[in-house]
Length: 248
Image (cartoon, one colour):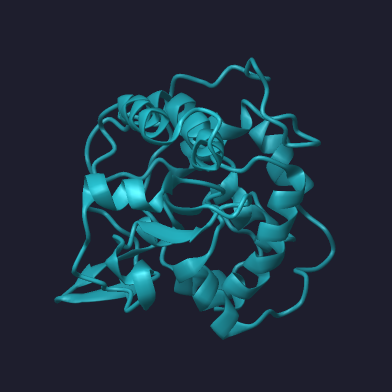
């Protein structure tokens, strides 16, 4: 099913060139993960990150670089991730380098329980019918079912491809609507590997190590939204903004 999704994303062009500065702005402040934890609740539990290695401004400056602070589709301010820069960025000689693959993260444990803990806290704080829970629910729903299927054998390798595979297993391939049951069985083997540097993308006609992923690269990199988005319209809007991210 994921193979069919990748092969389907191959129109004749790449949607034009895009805007470099708009792409950087969307990476740092964008809503491309779909949803997240209500911001006030996040700060009350996690606290503030003083590092601000992304040099963001405003309240976003207090969020870890693996997350973005943004307005969800219903207007609630949330903190969501893992973002693009949670994987495609790392420290080198004391400096954070955007585009350099992160190799120090540990995906060797199933962290699905964290979504259950957050769900209980948000329901108790805001109520199940609140806009805050509405903004949180799709992201948590996706994260909880994806987490068990992305456990790497040891620290270091990145299971991004397995994240996308596990997420699309629960979506209608045409409408992207979330299904009550998976539309295909996710294989037990977790695919994990090195995160490639972004500066190689400029010379690529196909995005992946497997030589899959040609044509519309903006749509392909929008797969980061598969865990937490709610509608096809939301996905299309994210893909339009990813044209700028590619330019960056």
